[in-house]
Image 1 (tube, rainbow, N blue to C red):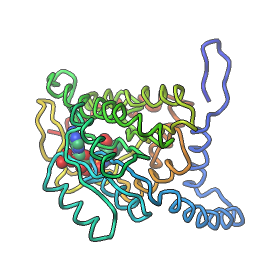
Image 2 (image 1 turned 180 degrees about the vertical axis):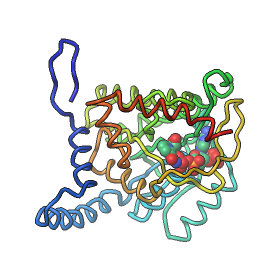
Image 3 (image 1 turned 60 degrees about the horizontal axis):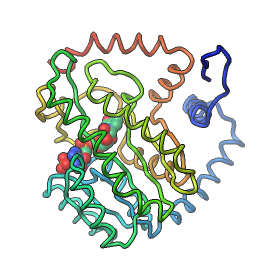
Length: 318
Ligand SMILES: NC(=O)c1ccc[n+]([C@@H]2O[C@H](COP(=O)([O-])OP(=O)(O)OC[C@H]3O[C@@H](n4cnc5c(N)ncnc54)[C@H](OP(=O)(O)O)[C@@H]3O)[C@@H](O)[C@H]2O)c1
């Protein structure tokens, strides 16, 4: 529920309702007939969803590893034709070989999304190969950290160059083909893209920009012309060799975290559902849903938690 400028209250929006339903199911406030019905409808919906993806050409940026790779495997198993991407040619080839061994129709396109010219060439290659593009998942992204006083211009440039501009360039060059197929654009954001995250401001800034872009696109294009969705991912298990961007602008190995994390396969399934159901926005994980409700109803609670995170920052990275 939002308080608008003149003090009147506006009703719940679509995503608010989804979040409340999810919270209710997380808290297991359900009764048997409802649960029975929804689980049976779920089976039916799953079948319909698989049919929906059959033959669709899907470009997933940053799909040689992590969430992108899990999404490529899932949509590929539904019969979608997958365009894999990443900068490191070796890991890209490894993923391509794994998917091919599972009989998934796919192609590999190495390239850095922070370069507009490279994005243009990648999209051209896809359309030359498959003759169309139905779904773009802007997933390529880097995690970053650093207190504002320590952050270098290089760190800012890389975070925004990849996380924000990478999605802007790819979307820009893919747009004519996506409009032709009346397709879908998905932006992969983060819970940190909803708040100014202390110790991670480069990341927050780079992901918050995606919300503005997704919202503007949702107004500029009707759902029939083009579906635009944004997904706020929560803490998810990392690849063992995952590197993140440090405040000096250099990549180093991520330190192991003790937080409870979502499985990459669960995130991939949520991405598939968001595309199939043409969701405008989706917030993942129980923490994410709680954060969304608190940001609407009692934002001070979120800021108290962020202040604690700020105090704990040095324990995480020192
Ligand atoms: N994991 C989480 O807890 C979490 C939480 C919230 C949001 N997210 C978001 O989810 C997305 C995926 O995260 P992840 O944890 O799966 O990351 P990951 O395991 O580090 O994988 C990132 C993928 O993106 C590629 N990539 C990175 N920079 C690229 C660039 N400039 N151009 C092209 N490809 C690039 C990587 O390959 P190369 O390195 O070879 O290029 C790799 O394939 C990101 O946008 C991230 O911000 C993740």
